Image (cartoon, rainbow, N blue to C red; front, side, top):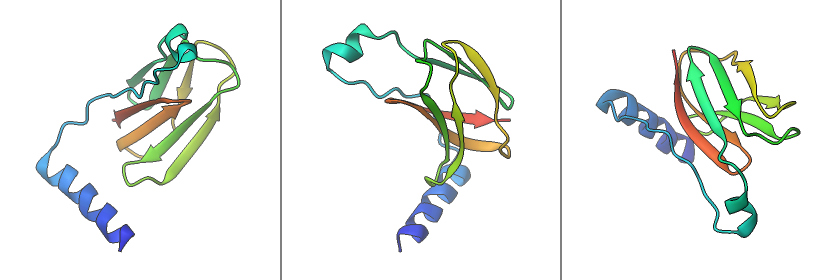
Length: 103
């Protein structure tokens, strides 16, 4: 049943053309306020990250919640190629989450 709901939600997003804007999850703790905001930029199948803590993981999810890829972050600023088909995806680094389109 849960799988059916996810499939129907995906079809609704695609069919109705809902825009998927970037969103960021923020915490109100003092350590989160002191951190710099993580920046994610997508161009075609490349993702650029800035202000990231080395050792974090960039996780790529499909819009239905399937984990597609995991990339270990090695520096505070880097660019990675995502080996996923064109479509809508959710990127997560730590508590930062973005909805993106891979063209």
